[in-house]
Amino acid sequence: FDPETMLDEYYTFKKGYFVNLEAPADALTYLWTYSDLADTENPITLSNDRYLYFNTSDAFNMNKSNENTHSFKLVLSITVTSMEGTVKEYIDSSTITIIDQNTTGHGGC
Image 1 (cartoon, one colour):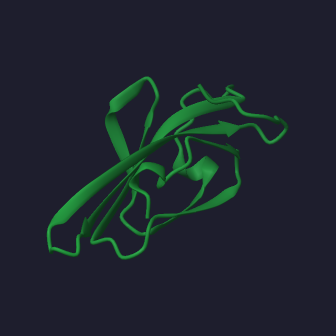
Image 2 (cartoon, rainbow, N blue to C red):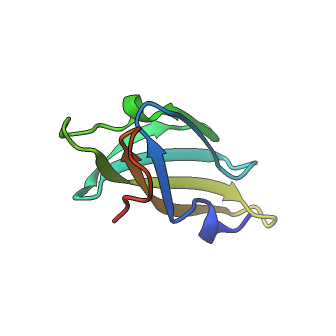
């Protein structure tokens, strides 16, 4: 796998939709977290599994209910064992934008 591109740079999903993201196979550990773009110091854990399956409305805290779009930082951290037996951690991040079901296009920052 390419550790630089575990995640796409941007994802845009509609509110209430189900999404499935997949991390590289055969890692020792998986950690999916997210935070508001304005508060990346307090990430919230979404999953410790290889597959991240979620409902966008349930998984992401939309702070302002009147917002049509809101962007978050999604981070995937994995640890793998190299051929030499050393353990390495890889981290990749993405901007996830949740949009109203009637909205089209990318709303990322």
